[in-house]
Length: 266
Ligand code: MLY
Image (cartoon, rainbow, N blue to C red; front, top):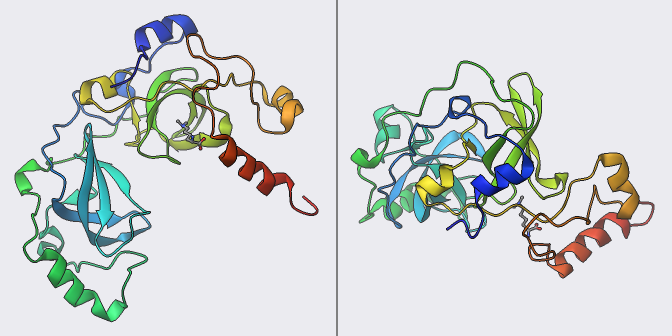
């Protein structure tokens, strides 16, 4: 559940408006997720996108699948919408005269791939073709986002999170996604038709867990630099958010600062 976060209240408090649904490359209603943990499918290797690999569904969250490439480790899981064109039923690659590839970082010797493939598919539960969605929603014709519009966006550094976000800038076909209540470290530019951005209300429809905004007020860069050198820390808790509740773990933050400032000549 989305905790206590309410877009309704939040939009009123911030005086902002939600980006209209037609801005996004998403279905009018989120795609139904009929996958089950343990099912196998074909997926493009996110680290080597020309390779088609075998992946296992290791988790489900709303309309998304948490995937792990067979033969890879558990540190490189990735998330895909069930209507993504990057996932296909097993057999699709061969049908198109392709060859299933070992994932980047295959744990074994490359020569053992054929046998590994045979074993991993033997007795596997393959996701049935009927639960895949025929095609991705079409891309809107143009970038119609505007600066200041609110949306829900995947935190690409923590891709299991979908978070409240604001369009921070536009750059041709690209949109700067900024995360509400977080310093700039998580911001990214993506194409307007990215599958990682969703209209306000998406998570409440899919049952995905929308993170509440962070607790940092984002300051203008010039001011933010004065406080402690981190892009704009501190200061004003978001309305209704007890401060400190969602901050970094102290240990983690300290480690990062050491990395930044503790080196000779830095
Ligand atoms: N506590 C972690 C995760 C931060 C997530 C930020 N997102 C929600 C924008 C960290 O501080 O790295």
